[in-house]
Amino acid sequence: MADPLSTLPAFLDAQQLAQGLLRDLVPHLEAGMSEQDVHRLALERGRALGVHTWFRPPAVRFGGPPALRPTDRPRRSPALAPGMLVELEVAPATDQAFGHAGVALAFQQADPPVVEGARELCRAVVGFASRWKCVGELFVFAQAWANNRRASLGGQTSIGFLALTPDRAWAGRWPQGAWAHSLLRRNQIQYFNPRRMNGVYVVRPRLVMDGQGASFAELVLVTPEDKRILGREGLDQVGRL
Figure 1 (cartoon, rainbow, N blue to C red):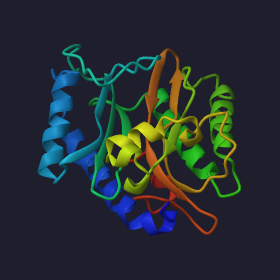
Figure 2 (cartoon, rainbow, N blue to C red):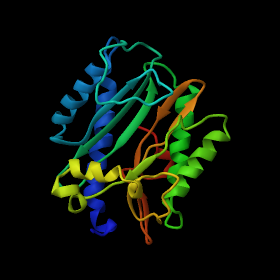
Figure 3 (cartoon, rainbow, N blue to C red):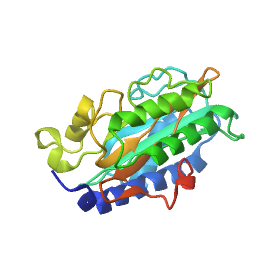
């Protein structure tokens, strides 16, 4: 298994690519677009930025549904309109690592409380992560944070996963094999994971409040010697484009 610190440059490059793609994508959103349109746009903008492989295809959700639904089949409707809640996640892969960045926003309007809450939740979980914590403690913390604000995680049983490198990909397949491994309980940020944090983690808690859901996603490195939020200079930048 590769040492987490040795993989940091590769994951940092991939995460900066993911964050740059989101910053490039959002200004291109237009009224009348469908989820399918935004999905295709994300692929196009990714190719323009040099993305040729995806850890997972771009995910697009309109309307902030309280219950998560599969994002591998983006819908033709509804049409994007001012005030509609939009969630975007992109996970471009290089030959050595992948990035994973997510953002929620209200199209052409100020963010509603659920978006601000989701941003603060992601920031709180990222800040809580440390070498002294077990992975499962992050999930318990996120659940308590939401409950204390009369919100919930919307039935989420995991709020992220360990980011694996090509040497740990199932059957040597990259990046598909790494995705398969990320689904195993031992790699999930869920209640039943007692392992100490050590590695690069995708952190993406989803907050449900007043019948709507929103989420942000970040990459965090935690080792016995170090902790870093990849592509960020500080905790206050978490959840920002």
